Every structure is written in C-alpha cells, then in structure tokens.
Image (cartoon, rainbow, N blue to C red; front, side, top):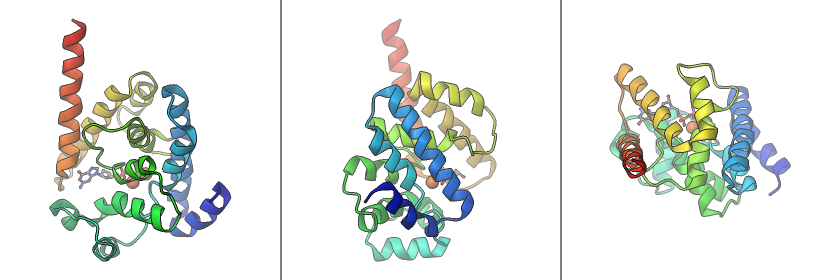
Length: 196
Ligand code: DGI
Ligand code: FE
Ligand code: FE
C-alpha cells in the first residue's frame, strides 16, 4: 500500500487532531531516522500508523483486543486505552498489510516503551512525545533538544515526566512503563561508570 492509500484508510479512523498528530509523528520520526541512521521509510510508516487504534471507544478497545486474541494485562483491563498500541499493531498488520516486525513492534510499544528497545522503537516513542503539534508541557524544549543529541537520555526524561504525571493523576501505571524507566536509568549509570 502506498502512502496515499494509507492516508485514505487512516483518516476516517481518526479525528482531526489525532490525524494531524499522526502526520507530525511521521515527519518527526523521519528526522530522527536521518540523525541516527535508521530506515526512513519504516520510521514514516510506523509514525503515521502508531495511533490508528487510538480513537476506538474505550470499551470497544477491550472487546476488540479479546476478539483478536491479544494478551491483556491487569492495567490494560482497568484502563483499556493502554491497549491502543497493541491493537494498532494488529490493525496495521491486518488492515494496512504491514508485515514488517520492526514497524509492528514500534507501534505496539509506543506508549509504554519496553526494556531493550530497537532504534525504531525508540524513534517512535520519542517522536510521539516531541512532534510539533503536542501542546507545550514542562521540559519539552529540552526534551526536543535531547532527542537529537542523546536519544537514551531523552527516553529517560520522557518517562520521568510521564511517571510523575501519572503519579500526580493517581492513575494505574503499567508495569512496562516502570520497567522501561528502570532499565534505561540502570543502563545510563553503567555507561557513566564506564567512561569514568
Ligand atoms: O496516544 P498519544 O496520546 O499520542 O500518546 P501515548 O500513546 O504515549 O499515550 C499517552 C498517554 O498514555 C498519556 O496520557 C500518558 C499515558 N500513559 C503512558 N504510560 C502509561 C500511561 N497511562 C497509564 N495509565 N499507565 C501507564 O503506564
Ligand atoms: Fe498513542
Ligand atoms: Fe501518538
């Protein structure tokens, strides 16, 4: 499927704001792929499609995930919006014909991240947070700069912000979000010790 067909199929699944965000993530992911030498086309497709399941009503998300036989953990059951990555990867595969496992992984994990992310996973995780249509939040200017200087440091910064926000909202935090944070903090410490 070429980009024109993809957009034709994607647009009716999203509201205006989500569509504009998706195109923003597409080109932001491309710029990160330039800097880090990732596959530019894969980054664009993953960026464009990452939220293709976001606008499915919350309870429908749970129903569909069950119907498609996707694994559902406790926090996803309590907060089915967390399923939009997994569900998005399923839709990308079945409805958009995306077979590339790297793209499907980046879509699957774009909300929580996961320990040991691939370069493409990292690019989509970061592009989702920094794309130009995101409303200004604390540290965003610095996070945008870090994205192009040290992507792992940027990931830690994003997860710090997200976790703080989730704690403040007193909502369920997915295990994977915490695990990802712990993993990259530990990795960063190791890196620092080695250069000492
Ligand atoms: O879909 P987007 O809005 O573009 O971005 P996203 O997929 O990163 O989702 C963002 C929301 O997900 C944001 O409000 C923070 C929330 N989130 C991230 N990790 C967790 C989480 N929400 C809960 N409840 N638990 C998490 O672990
Ligand atoms: Fe999302
Ligand atoms: Fe998004």
